[in-house]
Length: 242
Picture 1 (cartoon, rainbow, N blue to C red):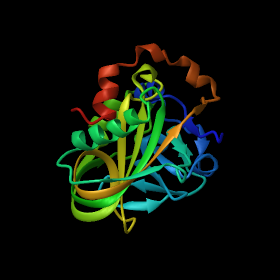
Picture 2 (tube, rainbow, N blue to C red):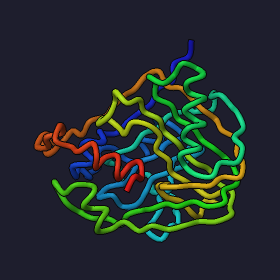
Picture 3 (spheres, rainbow, N blue to C red):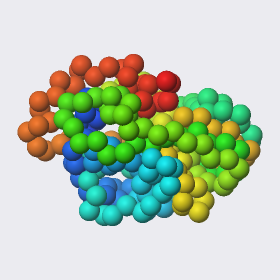
Picture 4 (cartoon, helix red, strand yellow):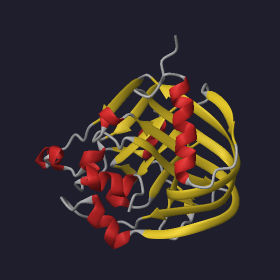
């Protein structure tokens, strides 16, 4: 049986506490998966991996291709081409989409497993965010985003939601539940999604049965007390519950 691995860079606890130094490069990350999401060194924008290409969403919602040498402090990636396909009808908000995805996961008895999904479709509205670079150490992600985050809204466009699901027992390693980033069909707009209204779409859902975590190698990582990361703050900044 073929094994599907999800590759993760660092932990969400470390990012939440302000560890935003590079752990791997974009080039190294792309060797581990063609689909995923994350951020860049010093939280310089939102990362979307799609079709083996890495994109950076900027604070104005515009998107550019990322250089292979760019540093990555936190990300997840995997290969999804062999996943389960199904259609999704009109959904009025992000919670309805999450419920539909969770139902499909549950149908395959997969609630204790990690999943990556991509939803290609037509979107009525996308509410999203991206941050600007903020060089710091031991400054929490919530505080960084309070200084740099810009929200924006897209309307009536085709594009792709990249969605990652982690089970609740992995809280801290990553955010439990669904986490979504968006990229427009023309690859010009994108960001971290807070809410979305979708007319229709087609989903490719891949269950992952292995996880590999690349922890930071430098000594500074060991100065962080990861258990002190606030789960409320993690949920607030990663799941969009502000």
